[in-house]
Image (tube, rainbow, N blue to C red):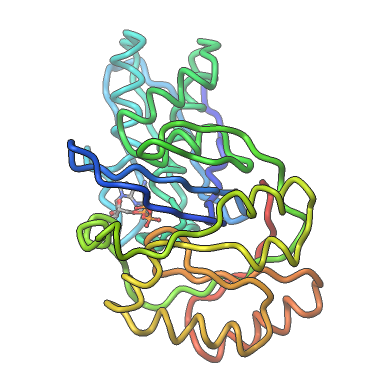
Length: 283
Ligand code: ATP
């Protein structure tokens, strides 16, 4: 038996770091939405009790360090499954890019194994299990548009953004989320106007959305990697309406209402940056 799950990337419409907790984690408030740039995760049930991952990537390990592997271990342990699974991952989401690719794959494995082995476990339970593996996995279990609180594990659904195009530009570097959070000094951070982003979503107000998207981590990543700032400036100069770094970076995205303008900006950004994508918001 085999089945396929899509694992869509996310962008952050907001990312606020509220405080550092006693356990060393940070309390955050993040509005995320899924985009139509997805990995493909295929799962084959095995009689033998083992987990195998196959994927072709220079940047992602295919052993027990892979988040998809960790998700399968957690799922099998939690539900006492003695069967095995072969997981085939075709990556399209750039790695260490701020687009949550690893979390998306792990969430796809949780949803996929639930279907593969006919367990009918509610999404809320899968999301809680995902949170034991990584902060963004809970959001990825649901997808769509949501606000994540706590360290990212408390999810509340939000209205979808107004329909628009997204140009993604990723400089040729990978950013470690841990390294960026390590530099956070909450008192010095910029804090985005999260309630106004929520209002813009509820009212499907594109200009209001573009004016209020914000990311507490952007200045930290930009100070460490000036190419992120350059790409942001280029995207703004070229005419994207709302421009922001996603997650801990380095990918910068621009929101654009009209398709023709989005294509023009996509083509323009390809002059600055090797990795550029034109996608739509699916959340
Ligand atoms: P986040 O902001 O959640 O850290 P990201 O998009 O910046 O996400 P990912 O692409 O998820 O970063 O990868 C982060 C790290 O996780 C990399 O070091 C990568 O090797 C590791 N990793 C483990 N499993 C996966 C996977 N299935 N896909 C991508 N990366 C994975």
